[in-house]
Amino acid sequence: MRKGAILCGCVLLVLFALVSSAFAVEITADMITKEGKIVRSGKIYVKDTKIRVEQGGTPIYSVVRGDKGVIWQINAYEKTYIEAKLTPELKPFVEEKFPGEVSRKLLGAETIDGHPTKKYEVTIKRGKATETYHQWFATDIKFPVKVANVNGKWSREYKNIKKGAADSLFDLPKGAEKDLTSAPDVLGGGGH
Image 1 (spheres, rainbow, N blue to C red):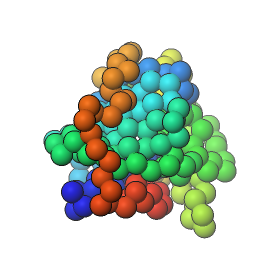
Image 2 (image 1 turned 30 degrees about the horizontal axis):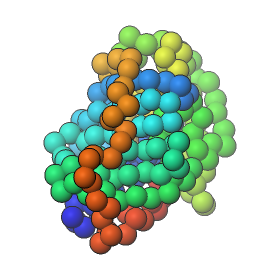
Image 3 (image 1 turned 90 degrees about the horizontal axis):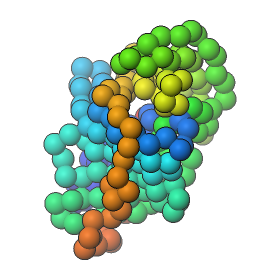
Image 4 (image 1 turned 135 degrees about the vertical axis):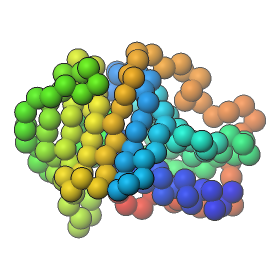
């Protein structure tokens, strides 16, 4: 479990350094993450302050519970989970404003996957590090349908966006036990 948790923790760092928009959003979408030449697919479910992120092909997924102030990294195969306190640095970029945002500049308008968007250049500060991203914020669904760092080495895009997400997606699986052998900080420690 530890090796899988650390690997998934790294995936989560990339994920949580990426996703930030209006809660009261309720959507399900395909998620495409590009990191250099590596392309990963997955799913995202958002309902108010609850977010579930699945990386394709793995039994390990993450649930952000803004209502409880926690993040769970769940191993569905082993029926175990790791819990960490939700901090601004771990909060996904599914809101219009990014955690740690220090500047935002409107670059124009584009259509992404059929959604009208406003394209922004957003600079965030995390500790001593400063990062700059492009964000395509869909004005019709109030959700960032694409985020990419300005150097082009990393991006995340949401496609096939549909309204709705079942409440049960954001709960711990029945019978899941807290994994006390893995340190909860595998979910933490820095951004993208």
